[in-house]
Each structure stands twice: as structure tokens, then as C-alpha cells.
Amino acid sequence: MRKTRFDELPQMWNILKGEMHLIGPRAEWKDLVEKYEKEIPYYNERHLVAPDITGWAQVNYPYGSSVEDAKQKLMYDLYYIKNWNIWLELKIVWMTAKTVIKKKGI
Image 1: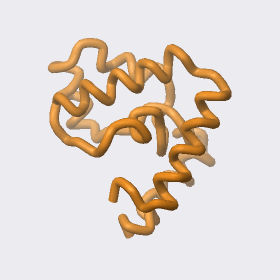
Image 2 (image 1 turned 90 degrees about the vertical axis):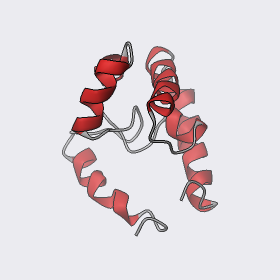
Image 3 (image 1 turned 180 degrees about the vertical axis):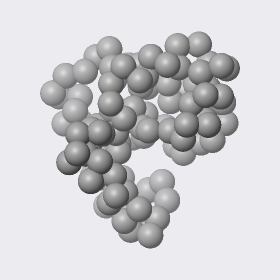
């Protein structure tokens, strides 16, 4: 399922219900959020917008599960929140499409 990205399909339902957006900071597990909020300054700022399926951090930084990776992704998330515009959204959509088509990040 991961190779075809079918594991993302249930999240599409959450988008239709209005609980998520297509683009923005990626949703994290509750346990990780609690951990990162204690260890990383300003981590909670990424929750100013609804969670997403893809985002600026996902198209610019490889998958990672360490605190250092979370810090790096936070920088991208905060950039997205601060500098949001329609062109940035379109760029993220384009970069996400290329990632999926080329099967990167699997």
C-alpha cells in the first residue's frame, strides 16, 4: 500500500469532512506532538493551521523520525505558514505530483 500511496486515501475523507487540508504542516501522532512540544521551541506554532496530506516540509525534506528531523521540518512548516500564497500552494502541488509520479520517498 505504501508504494502506491493508497494509505493516504483515508485522509481524503478527513479533507472532505473539513478536518484536514490538502496542503500544510503534516499531521503527527499525538505522542510525537507531545514529545516535540517539550523538546522543540515553537513546535506548537505549526498547529496554527489545519493538518494536511502534503506540505512544504514534505517536498523539501526527506522522511525522518528524529528530533533533529522534526526541527528541520518545523522550519519548513513555519516558512509555509508565514509565507502562504497561492503560488506557494501551486508549487507544493507540482512538487508533490512529481514526487508521487517518480515514486520518491517510499
